[in-house]
Length: 257
Ligand SMILES: *[C@@H]1O[C@H](CO)[C@@H](O)[C@H](O)[C@H]1NC(C)=O
Ligand SMILES: *[C@@H]1O[C@H](CO)[C@@H](O)[C@H](O)[C@H]1NC(C)=O
Ligand SMILES: *[C@@H]1O[C@H](CO)[C@@H](O)[C@H](O)[C@H]1NC(C)=O
Ligand SMILES: *[C@@H]1O[C@H](CO)[C@@H](O)[C@H](O)[C@H]1NC(C)=O
Ligand SMILES: *[C@@H]1O[C@H](CO)[C@@H](O)[C@H](O)[C@H]1NC(C)=O
Image (cartoon, rainbow, N blue to C red; front, side, top):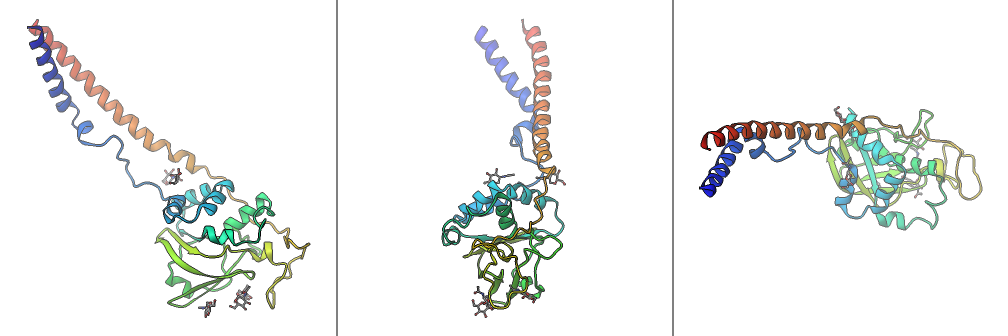
């Protein structure tokens, strides 16, 4: 008798749960209203040869700035991604000779404040602003392009885009085989006719011009609250279904006894 009741109760519980909480059973726990936010680091990780750049993005906190700008920008962003080989072929100590602020400038110099498809480089006019540029025209670079080649010049380094990691608005990521050394940090021995006579200092060639500092971003902290709130609401729905089901069940059990 007791085992029959147990079996009956188990069946009733299963039926009630299936009937009262259909949403909870048919949908995965947290589907999320939108796709995962665009994430530069994830794009670079997939590329497999950008660990130095990923580390720099992290230590300079430019990573957060970029991810939050991607979410909010109407213009998108373009990132030039030097490979690990590119960083390894820098003269020893090049990165370590830079202050924290100069490292931020170096990283921001590799980011353009709008989305460029490969073909759109053919119609850009030089010099091109980077995220390190302020309005006095520092930290710019020049790009010359044909249908088959995109050349980038900083005044210190000439290089070319070798690979497209991503080119969907709002984010373009292009692989390059050299670190883009800004003239404003490394222009001690300018090539040919240098336009800006940098205040040459020692052999490090650092200038004391400072780039725009990365802005602290509020939105990114908020970003995480909405999905978890959605999960909480969904969870509460399941709990209420269960409470309702338990109430009905107790009535049935009461009538059986
Ligand atoms: C971006 O992707 C990286 C690597 O996959 C991950 O560690 C990081 O948490 C992600 N950031 C965001 C904001 O999703
Ligand atoms: C790009 O640079 C290479 C040399 O590195 C040169 O031969 C080529 O003409 C350049 N192309 C453009 C479009 O500037
Ligand atoms: C970049 O382009 C501008 C405009 O054409 C030119 O004046 C400048 O010399 C160029 N700089 C470099 C480093 O090529
Ligand atoms: C970069 O290319 C320009 C021509 O596009 C040339 O005048 C300059 O000397 C080159 N600079 C270096 C550092 O190779
Ligand atoms: C992205 O934008 C949405 C809507 O504008 C906002 O709710 C969210 O917090 C933003 N996320 C980030 C990472 O900035």
